[in-house]
Amino acid sequence: MKSGSEQSQKVLYEALLKSEARYRELVEHANSIILRWDQHGYITFFNEYAQKFFGYSEEEIIGQHVVDTIVPENESTGRDLRPLMEDICNHPEKYEYNINENITRSGKRVWIAWTNKVLLDDDGKPVGALSIGSDITEQRRLEEELKQAHKMQAIGQLAGGIAHDFNNFLQGIMGYAEIISADNKGNITAENATKILDTAQHAADLTKQLLTFARKGKYELIDCNLHNLIVDVMSILDRTIDKRIIIQKQFHAIQYHVLGDASQLRSSLLNLALNAKDAMQDGGLLQFSTSNEFLNKEEISNDEFDVESGEYLCIKITDTGKGMDKDTLSRIFEPFFTTKKIGKGTGLGLAAVYGAVHLHKGIISCSSEFGYGSELRMCLPVLHAHKMGEKNNKTENFSLKKISIMLVDDEQIVRTYTKVLFEKHGHKVISFSMGVQAISYYADHWQEIDLVLLDMVMPNMNGRELFVHLKAINPHIRAVLSTGYSLDSEAQDLLDQGILDYIEKPFTVGVFEQKVARFFN
Image (cartoon, rainbow, N blue to C red; front, side, top):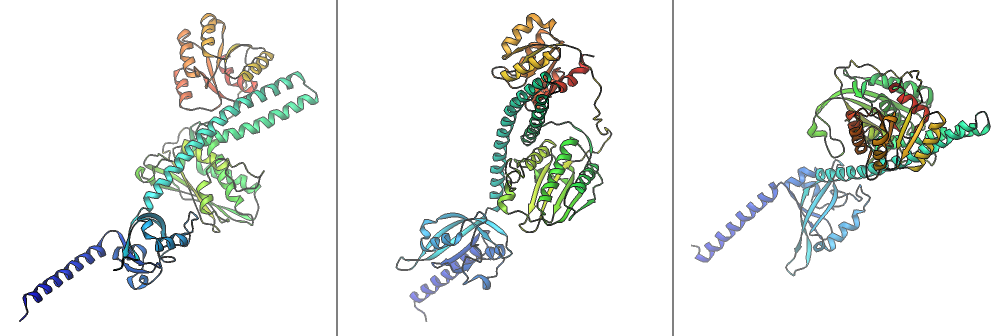
């Protein structure tokens, strides 16, 4: 018969067994990665959740080193993880919490937040660590998207500001070149002035790309047949690119009309195609494909693209070129970023595409694998009722009578050249640098002023505020907005309030006269 002491020990032993069983059951079925590893980095325990998450059975993973199983030698960020893991093995007390990239058996990269607890032997010496991990891959992806969105927004604001100021300078360059040309007709000086005008116009085209990226570009909405635009782009490419590149189309979309700016969309498609072409130096396949997809707002909206649920026309442009590494892929839409040699590219093409897609309330993404080509995917909201037709871009004949103009612009070079050049064309010009001066003059002389030309961005009082004051003096005021940006929300608001039109800097006197002729003839 057992003594009371023996029975007590048995009860205690059974209680320990039950406690251990409950502990093991808890650990095995916990919705967290739980593993134990010795001071050399070899895995001694791997719970059931960890096995399912990483794709290893217990027999396969026990006794294996963490590096080259669940830990890659290098993170996708470029960080070498071998020294890190060695340091954790030797000094686990320093790493009560750490985040690093891990890898599953299938090769999928995941980010895990680890809590580490040092394991000690009876003498108090470290013999390993107990690690509990949580998958934060999706959280990290969202954080990276947020950082990227903020970066792109900041770059966009900078690009827009630079383009605005640069357009003011170009306005002066083009204006004085026109004056020189007008004063020297028929000689070599006039020819050189024309070359200056052409060069300045090319510079203006670059700033337009910057403005498109900054979402301040020209934006005229009409019914656009994207299949026709793609065919147009293919026709251009067929005549100009390397004949070793085969161009194909696969049009599966049934609804292929969108509400958009045909010029911007055609330019965007061409930019994407040329970028793909440049990746195929030895030839390859360039393919355009379309399809209709229903995109859900909750699934696709983020800090970069805030779009609505609905049916979209998705255009994919794929190539069989050299592809891109992850760093290049993450930066392709940044302005001035280019992998091309100096003089071969400005780094503005894809940035302009990015801005154009934003303006059209669409989304754009790119996937690529180094050595295996790339795929750019652009999705735009479908226009179901397409009755507007293509815009007629024919230039109408015009003849502008001589008018009296009040110019308000804070840039002296713009005021000076505008007065000289416009008066050479027979117009009368009075100019002011500040809104207060213009209001005072207009109050006394509004009946003598045929047209007011307002700069949008000015210190103290901008074009919108000035127009409100002038309209209070003369409700029938005729005014045109001059802007270094393009048609944005403020400019649109002025059009709604009665301003006649807007004109983008830089512009020539001929463009100005054509713009306002219909209001005076």
